Length: 122
Image (cartoon, rainbow, N blue to C red; front, side, top):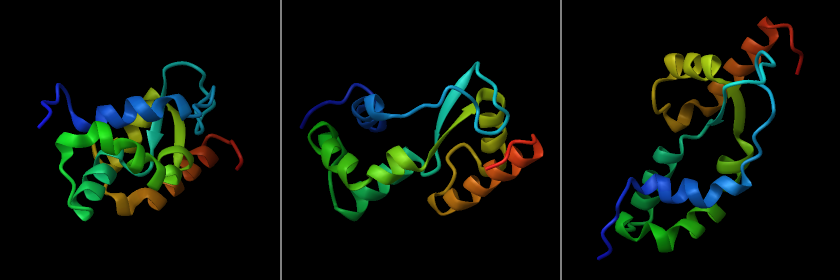
């Protein structure tokens, strides 16, 4: 069995990272510095659920990650948002360090509400 040198989600993130479409400004306030890329569906929770649901051994993540990415393209590449670091921290303060998967739509709504508060429309 291969010995992994780091957390399994990092192997997936490294593979998927080239396809991320990070915006040049915060979706909430329009800031252009200290930008973070946020997945509404936590990649760690999504990956752990997928491994468990499919009875897969996480030690083999390097050979499994392409299948995971293909099966979860919308969650990894579409249900995402670019936020300035302060707004990213604020989102996690509301929804926790690893927001439960069931909160994705609530997170999207929270971002929209914050955007409206900053006078940015849609």
